[in-house]
Image 1 (cartoon, helix red, strand yellow):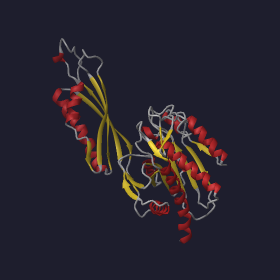
Image 2: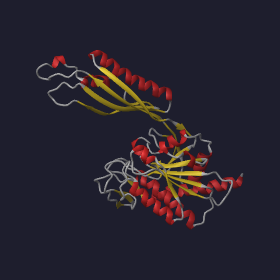
Image 3: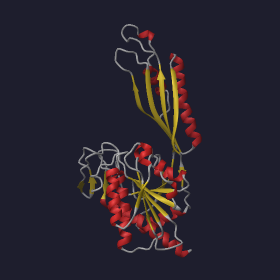
Image 4: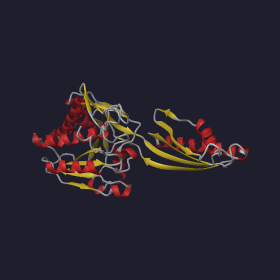
Length: 365
């Protein structure tokens, strides 16, 4: 609740990072901030802390959570109702992903308080995740020494997310011809009408079980009495298979091209790769540890794919496989966002048990 009261919108995370650095320092940990902020136009970089293990021969584990939140995420006032934490209804809560941050910080404190044996741990708090995983794209890779990791950015505690899709963003500019809408409308080419035709013929939403597509933003026109000359459309496509992603993006491009051809307009179609898919095998060490830890926590684990992207996509592209685990956040990105205190506790226990199991499994070998 203390964390969500500190504003940390994407690219404006400095105040919250200062609080985290102070708390890490109180626990005897030195933290390092990278230069991601300067690359993305933000006021803070990603924050790293390193915990020396008390046991050798144990996998080095990364724990990650992003610190930025979406709008409306300023002046959040958390409230507790029947064991759940909500905002006051005028903002999001920010459990996505301050809950992940809180769990990591609680685990670090518990390791010290209970003198629990563990291997080396890398802690990474990332910025600007909510605006396209932007902060993690500029992490200092020399700091990523872990064998594998866990991204605490899921929902239900019992869900282990081992698969996420690739995403391409698209931006299309359609150029028609301006004209007076009341005097000479026949001399104009309405760019918005062209865009509307293309979008109406486009496959959008759920394409198949592995692929989705969306048109999210349209901007164009200057006045109601002028036939709009230009319109800019922004959208995206996602798929767990790159061949399907390319096919969907090609389809979207083709519909814009055909609509422009029909009305004599022109289009410029740009594709911006956002991130690439990953999949953690069910027999991977990260998965096996998580399943054992879930059972130790009294959780029946469910292995699932997700349709969303996270910093795990970026880490995996760098050769650091990461599983996504949840700590209970619900209805994220809405004013109804909430989290149950019991789920946060289970999430923290799950992470703690993963660390314990990494030692136990190493001993058995």
